Each structure stands twice: as C-alpha cells, then as structure tokens.
Image (cartoon, rainbow, N blue to C red; front, side, top):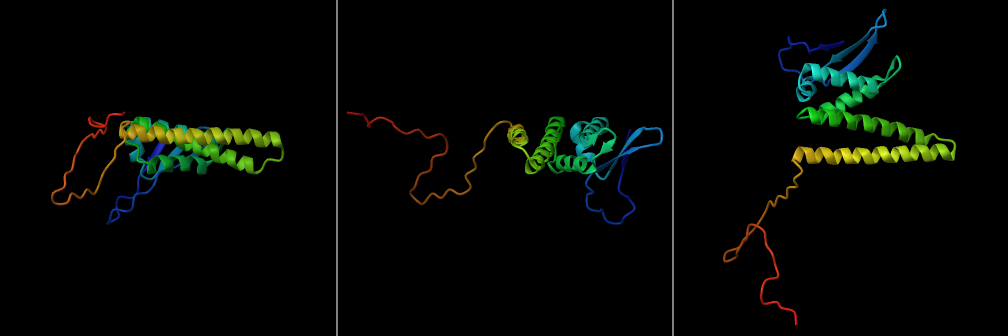
Length: 182
C-alpha cells in the first residue's frame, strides 16, 4: 500500500519544493506499508501516473530492503536521484531508477573492496566494481542519446565576417579540380 502525504497548503507563500522521501513500516499483522512524503509528482507524472509511479517507488524500496530490514538511505538516495534528474517519460524514469540502483551497488562494492583481507576477495570485488562502473557509464550514454534523439549538436556562437569577406554556411568539401597529382 502506498500513502502520499502532501505539504501543508495553508502557508501564505509557496514553500520550496520538498523532495520526495519514502518510509516502510510493518504493522502488528506483518503487513507492509510504504509512506511517501514530499513532492513525488515529478516521478509520478514521468512514470505515467500515480499507479505506475507508486509501483516504481515500491521497486525502489525493494532495492533498499533485505528481508524485513529496510535501508531508508539507499531507497531515498535513488528516489532523490530520479527526482533530481527530472525524468520526462516512463522510459527515463525506469532508466534513472536503474542508474540509481547501479550506483548503489557500485558504492557497496567500493566499500567492500576497501575492506577486503584476502586477494580472492579483492579480485572479486574489483571485477564487480569495474562492471558496475562501466554499466553506469553506459547508462549515462543511453540517457544522453535518448534525451537528444541520438543526435549530436554543434553550436557555433560567434562568427565574424569583416567587410569584403565571405562566409559559407553548410557543408564544405575541399580538394576540387586544379590539384592533380603528378
């Protein structure tokens, strides 16, 4: 069950946007309740509505869970990351969630690598960290391509053409006639 609480609307001036946070509770009957606070509408809108956004937040909470324990810092990091990256549609919301989870796993492996005692543990943690960091880089590239439509744009901001000069706008090819090899 997902419960959304909104900021108090009685304040005279519009308060700064409150970032979303999640909390997970177990009641006496072992039912799990997730409470979402703050402005989650950016995520909900990008995910395709309240139902899809709620499901995405539940998945994020699962990343920060192990059995009955809940790592609210891990879940809230991912929620904050997705929110701050301003997803535009469901595909971006999903990719950003995966990127947050990949980053979490990479930081866990980095911490593990810093505390290993034996060479096999070091090799294992190093390989996993390397794969996660490369995956995150690939995800960043995928996000860039998705947002830009796969196109690269070059912008020339200042062009000066003096009196009597000529400027050409468009594709320029060199190597025309008159330059034959002997």
